[in-house]
Length: 465
Image 1 (cartoon, rainbow, N blue to C red):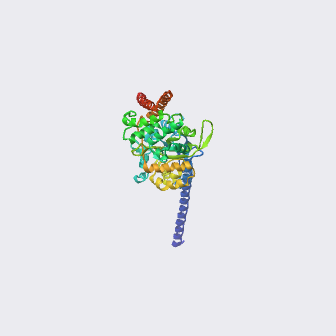
Image 2 (tube, one colour):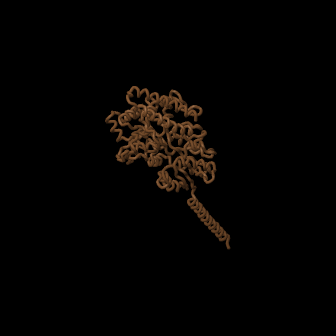
Image 3 (cartoon, rainbow, N blue to C red):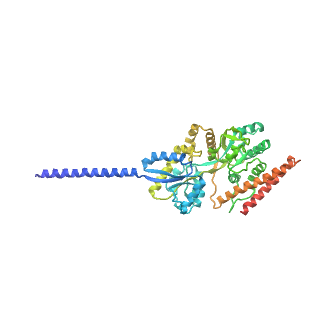
């Protein structure tokens, strides 16, 4: 064989080998690609946004899995949907490794109280490791601030609520026609309490109900320039007294509903006209009332920003939880962050929150996306709520409660004892004014005496516990 022939054979053999190698590599790469598609990173989540079969967050997760999830090889799997308190206990049990509690999911919804109560909370991701300063500046600052635990951003806001005033406008309009009180008068606490007392005098019924006495007092003291907390509980001083007196006067007079249960029940039975409560409760306000004689009436519910004291900075309690990510591997953590960034992008965030009655968490979502989303809403209650949200975001500061070891215990005792004290004092006043011959001046003196007594008794019981 000639030299040229041997050269051609070798050349062809080399080319053949190269072609086979390319085919093998291509098959191998294709196999790896298919393997990645078949086995994406799968993350679990526990949350509180709706039932397992009817959840706005589940819908958003499905959308993520079908789009970005497919592209990035990420699947989010919902393994628990529950109420806030149940989820709080489940997270703590899992963190402690209690028998039967199982392991923590990759992501879970939590309030600061949950993280503060967790063992080994250092096992939670600090979101500052994955978000740039520029990205974090997009979020409403107060919402981020609440998630900072031990100098680390451990809770990322994804949907927030606040306190809102819900009004049975049907009953209010009848009262307004008789009394001259206007809806705008309810923008201040002074106006609310004045209207409440007038309504009680006209009807003998309560006008106002507030689900969270603790929030009214805490934010009220703050806006008046005082300090609500001392070293181990509530600070009872002149500023606290300024917040106590108008509320207690209306409550003792019978103008504040102090029954058991949430404000939604008081509004449903027309035992109250105005409710100050979490904005997330919009879903539970019925479009009709049922009276004691078992007759019913359709009503219009409207929402307004929470009242404030006159001549103070407008401030309101922020509510709502966020999402924590459990430390694992860099790949799994990055996958979780990919989902959370997607969920809090303005367009997706507004789509999510408007389905469950919450606020979005970025400035851009409020200004650029929420107005159009509100225009597309059909439910009048939700339209009214989101208009109140936008006014609140524009004109109010969101109050962030301090992270104190005794906060939760103090809140629980405050709610229980304030209601009990005011209810008992109201009964004493009602019994006293039924005496024959009591005039308006005597009633006023008696009311102030009982308000003074209620303050002193409440201070004593809170300091004893």
